[in-house]
Every structure is written in structure tokens, then in C-alpha cells.
Amino acid sequence: MPSKNPISKVSSNERYSRFQRALIFERDLLQSEPLVGYCREYGLEVEAVTEYEMIQAALNAALRERRPYDLIFIDANNGLNDITPTLKLIDENPQYSQTTAIGMISDQQHSISEELLHLGASSLLVKPILGKDLEFILSGAFERLEIAESESTKWQTGRPLDILVVD
Image 1 (tube, rainbow, N blue to C red):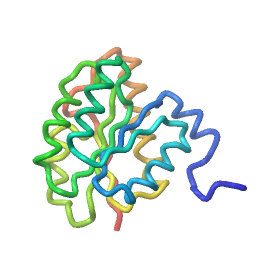
Image 2 (tube, rainbow, N blue to C red):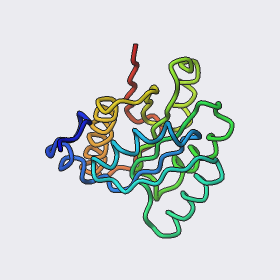
Image 3 (spheres, helix red, strand yellow):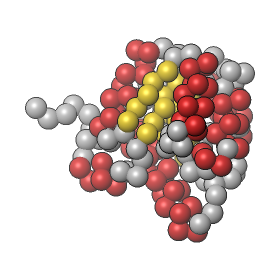
Image 4 (cartoon, rainbow, N blue to C red):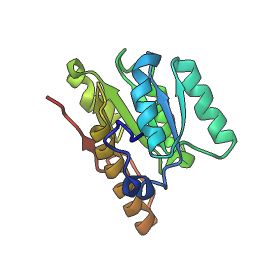
């Protein structure tokens, strides 16, 4: 039976095969299910966590194992206080130099978009997340990764951003 998701193209899966692990921090487990499904369609190993302490533990375990996440989706629906240390850890740790942090906000949260990007998120997704939105974000993350690897440079704050605004 064919997939219902519009992103299950072999060419897309092959293109993004560089991305192997994703961590999703979403306080509402039901809201994370579509994103988990989309990521798995891309062949990603996905871990979804619902509590701030769980994301910190997952990040620390990944560093100990020397298997950092390639993509980290961070729910910002309850504001930035809880996630600021997480974004700083991702942005400042050399093992996460090629990790893409993606902030997830609701349509009513555009006021925190700029601050979220300043804290280290390289992309923003507006909920509800659709397959085409993830395709757009993965495409931008993949292109930045290719540029960084070809120039042998470490990503820094101020790197190019992808911002998707859905009306």
C-alpha cells in the first residue's frame, strides 16, 4: 500500500541519507507523531522526548556515545526559558557543529521567532507540521551541510537560515 505522506520519494530518502539520527522534543506526544513518521520515512533513527530533563539526558548520552544527533527539533510552545540551555549546548559543543537545531512554534508565536534563531536554531517550523514543510527544512539543512563540508568550516551562529511561514 503506498504511503499517504507526500515526502516518501526514493530520491529524497537517498539525498538525505547523511542524516541518520533525529531527536524530537515535543511536550505533547500526540503532536510529535506526524513528525516522527515523516522522519522515519527519511530513514532517520528517531527519539522523541516530552520533558526538558529528557532532552538534556538524551543529548548528554549522545555525546558520551560520540553519536550526536544530526537533527534536533525543539518545541518552543511554552516559551524559551526551558530550551535556552539546550540550544546553547547544541550551538557551543564541537560535537554538534554539524547538527541542525529546528525550532517548532505555533502560529501565534511569531514574536519569539527572532530570539529563537538568535539562540541557535537554524530553522523554524510552524505547527502543524506537514511533510512538505519538513522537505523544505531538510533541503536547506542538507545544502548547508554540503557547503560546510566542502569548505571544511565549522558552522557558527549567524549561519544561513530557513524560515517557513505558513498562512
